Length: 218
Ligand code: E4P
Image 1 (cartoon, protein in one colour):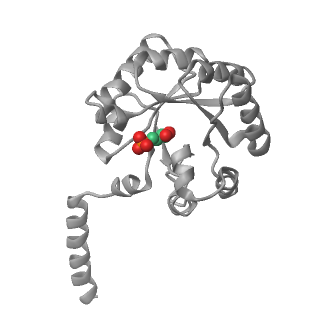
Image 2 (cartoon, protein in one colour):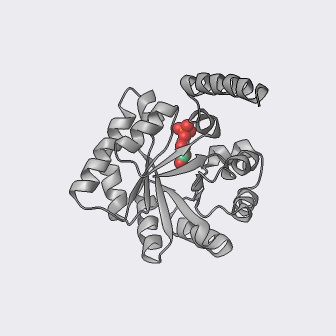
Image 3 (tube, helix red, strand yellow):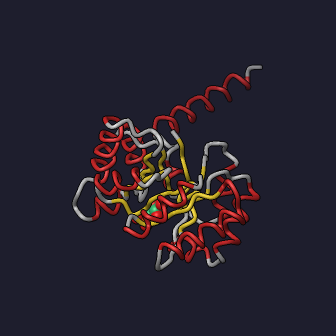
């Protein structure tokens, strides 16, 4: 059960990584754009921070160009590199080639069970079903996670992990793990909310008041 942060904001990642609860980071072109930084600078900072699993999305117009860029990233950043490719014929062929070389690939933009099947067959280390975006289109994002987990269990797929992406709320995190996701990638704002419960706050308040009472008598 691993938690990744879904952001390219190094300040936020540094803050949360210190908690010891973060197992990796996923980035994408939109998140890199929002960081206003060069992708390689973000990856280098994350590697220097001690992150051991960083999804780096490759945007290229052919299998050859994808594999070439994946090699460059892997040579530069080493074992922390997970290459992210879209679930397209070119993306999956690149995934197949890279997986054969032992390079980890995260197949992204997964919206159906059959796409996850193809990605697993291509040797993906991770398949990323987009829970929130499926929900946005009036289908069940969490059902998709459940369907993929079910087929992977029935077919003894152990090499490909389900990475629930496009998470929009804390409840989805719990459910995604319950339905069989191995990893959830979560925006920092949602990760923060995972700590919260009204009864924890109330309980803390009561304990603090009672402790003040005890302390005044010591
Ligand atoms: C991460 O791998 C995905 O790119 C990300 O979770 C997509 O999230 P969004 O649908 O909120 O943009």
